[in-house]
Amino acid sequence: MNLVQRVTPAVDTQQPPLLELRVEGKAFGDVPVLGQLALRLQPGEVVSLLGPSGCGKSTLLRLVAQLDRDFDGELRTRPDHVGFIFQEPRLMPWLSVADNIGFSDGRQYDRARVTGLIEEVGLGGFAEALPKQLSGGMAQRVAIARGLYGQPQLLLLDEPFSAVDAFTRFKLQDLLLDLARRHRIALLVVTHDVDEALYLSNRVLVIGNRPGKVCRELHVPLGYPRDRRDELLGRLRNQALEALQGARAI
Image (tube, rainbow, N blue to C red; front, side, top):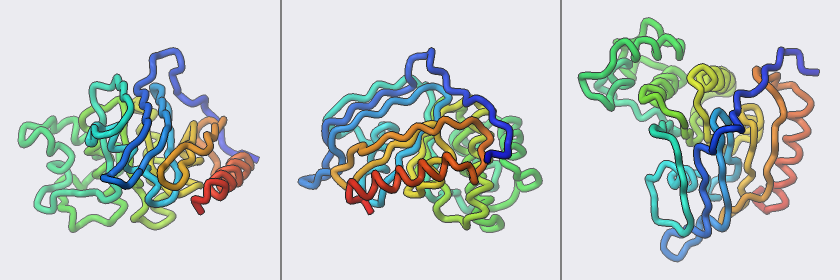
């Protein structure tokens, strides 16, 4: 039984999609990485790309971010601003928390906005702290704030919580969902964690081994906040594992 109150997800299906990506193929030299696949994301939607290491998930994220344009296919994107959060926080060790968040604008960054983001991610009182004074979870909170600083419509996350312990991961997952709804942004998350993908997402795209293709799409018809013990999440977990096994991904 789900013991928490459910809130209807804030996915806007009446608006044009934020992005539409069609991939016919992507290779590095003679090595195929991605096969034929399609990805579509609506405003306010949370979609996870789930699959084993090496299946092309991060490559797909780089195509969406237009960090890599060398592929066969087409990308249509609407967001004016896209934020990117990496697996590691990648903070500048000589800069304070506040300066790391506003780094993209140099010394002229919006200090009021940075202060607000520091409070939102639960780091009040740490604005002047250096990265070496932070725990791994705190450093990743700084990275999330930095990703939000540019007021993105879409936030891309590449296994953002894989380097922290399980309990910190749970807290960061809940923080991310709260911030996404507060800032009204969509999320595209790369992960190899089945439970994380299902807990976060409206939809989960299961990617098989390379060349990566979508072997199953799972819809998660649950509102937010969610209960990790929900029986539906357990049933969907079994379906995701079956899809990964069927694709010989595990």
